[in-house]
Each structure stands twice: as C-alpha cells, then as structure tokens.
Image (tube, rainbow, N blue to C red; front, side, top):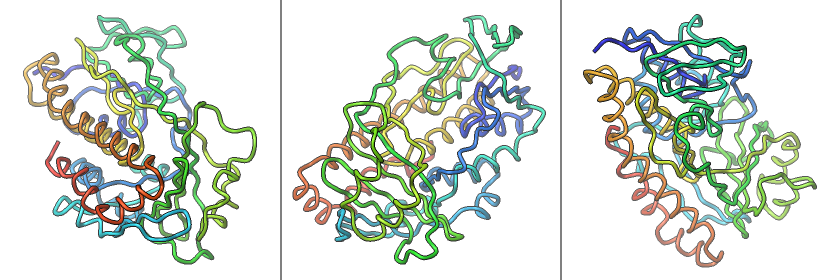
Length: 366
C-alpha cells in the first residue's frame, strides 16, 4: 500500500510509540502536542510483562532496562500490614518476560529520544478534524492528512470531532500519585498494595535509586479533591505509609474514568491509548494497552493493502483484548469493595489464582 501521510495528535506514550514504529517503517509522520512538556516527572508506572514485551519489540528495551527497576514480587496487605497474599511476578506472567517499574518521565524521555525530533511539534493544538482529513490547528493553519490518529488522551479532541458517542464515565474513584525518597524507610521492595476499608488502597512500587512510587485511591462520589489535606484519609494506615505520606503534600491528583465508546476507527481516523479506552487502574494495563495499540496499528498499516482495511484489522485485533481488560478491572474493583473480612479471606485463599486468571489471555501476542 502507499504509505499514508499520518498525523498523530498527542505526544504521550501511545503517540510516541506509534511515531517510532511508523517512522521505522518509512511512513511520513507528523506528531503534534498541545503541551510544551508531556512528562510527569513526579509520577511512576508499573510496566507489566506484556508492556515490557512491546517496548522490546519497538527496539527501546535496552534503554528502558537502564532506567527501570525489576519487580519480582507482588504483595497484598491489609492497611495494618498483615499479609493477605504474595507471589513471584513470574508465576503470573510465565514466559512472557519481566515486569518493571519506571518513572513516567524516564519512559517519556526514552520514547522521545527514539523519535526524530523534527517529526514532533509541541505547543501545537488541534481545534478540529473533518471527515475528509482536514485538520485545523489553534493558530488557524489547516492541513490535510490521509490518516489522523487520536493519541490525545481521555479528553481527546479527535474523538470529540469525529467519533461522538458517550463521554468517559467517572468510576467513583479519585487518586493521588507521588514519588518519595525511601532511603530511610525500611521494608519497601517490589510492588505492595495495602488495602483499607471504604475502598481505600495505598500502593508502593520500588523504583530504585532510593525512590518509591506511591499511589493512593479512594471511593468518592465527586470528581474534585477534598478541601482538607487528602493524607488524613489514610491516617489509619500503618507500616511505612505514615512516613511516605509526609512527602505527599504536592501529590498529583486525578479523578478516574472509564471509556464507554468501543468503536475506535472510522474512514481516515483512529483512536489509540486513553483516547480510545481509558481504564480503571486496577490491573495496571492502561499503559500496556496503549503500547500494544501503537504497535498493532503500525503492523496493520504495513501489512494491509489500504488504510480502510488496515483500520478494520486493527479494530478486530484489539476489541476482544481490551474488552477482557475492562471486564477484569470490573471484577477486581468489585472484589476490592467487598466487606473487609470477606475481601481479606478471599485474597488469602485465592489471591495468586485470581491474578493468574486475570492476566492469562494477555500472555498471547496482541
């Protein structure tokens, strides 16, 4: 097929991954990003094995290894530190490979460095996209593309311009993220989730070099942050949590959403990453699905005879896998909100088995 002139809207994880994959295949690609800086240096990411596998396929695995920390164990505790379940990550992922933890800033820097800088324009906002590929930018300029890719996040301009459909649904959860210094806080290793009452979770993921990624969430009827200091919501958590919270005054706050639109392609346009399918963070698959989206789209555009056929193939390859992740997130969130004694009993009896079942279909290549 003639390689379509492609505009990628958004220079986050999915946009840069797609840009790298298409440029490597000789496609003419422009990337635009409305922000001057797309990194979130104060937050981290847990990269499950299917995400790491995709980064290796992209050709940036060695650079990721230099910056990331292996995650060997996953542990579930109650809010007082009593163990509920623990297992080696390799028992969940088998031969797929390792799981890693990395700062969002480091991942973004690796992907940015891998993409030709002349292909990316920051401080460039898309105002609208039409059915025939005409793209209007905020400065009034208009260009025409054979393919427009919305990689512009949960509030995607491309989705709103071309796809319509329901807006992402608030999940009734809000969260805070920050990176703390753990050099004087013993016992922080790998991945540990501490589950409290009233739908509260405090997760720590070891980043190496004296850093730990902290993620806290809670059920909430509203999408705004509480007026009072959020850290009081976790004041009854024991172990290392109180000392970590001392460093969380400026944590990054977000309300959590899930996309309900399951159609991600139309003639000359496609959505990937959070623009297509925002998730509950329960399975930590948001980043993994975004990475997979990008590589699968690059593969279908290369293999199929025209854009229309390629986009149909992309939708077909991704729909079932994404639907599985959504369903498993719902199951895990439901389990998390069981009465505390029942939840703890379930995890003690079947925690590892449940994690294996959640992830089993993701062992296969996307």
